[in-house]
Length: 136
Image 1 (cartoon, rainbow, N blue to C red):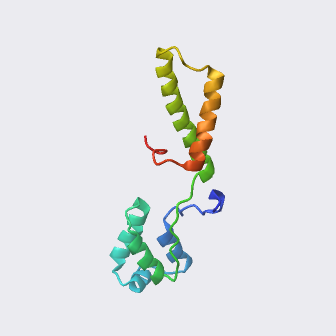
Image 2 (image 1 turned 90 degrees about the vertical axis):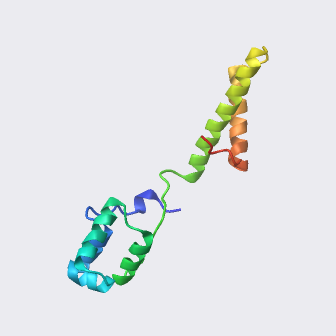
Image 3 (image 1 turned 120 degrees about the horizontal axis):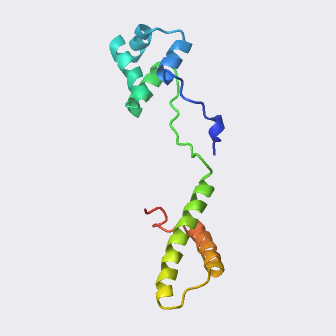
């Protein structure tokens, strides 16, 4: 997995403009390589900044500028930690609901026993990853 700190931050003017400028190309030169007008290139750069550019357009432009397009999602924390936290949350929800209904029948468990059961169920959820784990 890639560490979040190793992923570069998007340049202030966007990747397209940053690469074009690093190559020493003006908009007219870059537009010619991409096969579009200067105005269309300006729109592409603006669309990238707004998050409104398509991956296909980015790929085409990257090719024209001699670049690779690297598309990825970088988790903000380790995947295992995300799963563990969600499993614990679901286990707490499930067992607290059961314990409340058992309290109505005077058969609820004490807090320590409930906490142990929650941890056991959370570990089970982490391993099995049931389909409902991420349901809201």
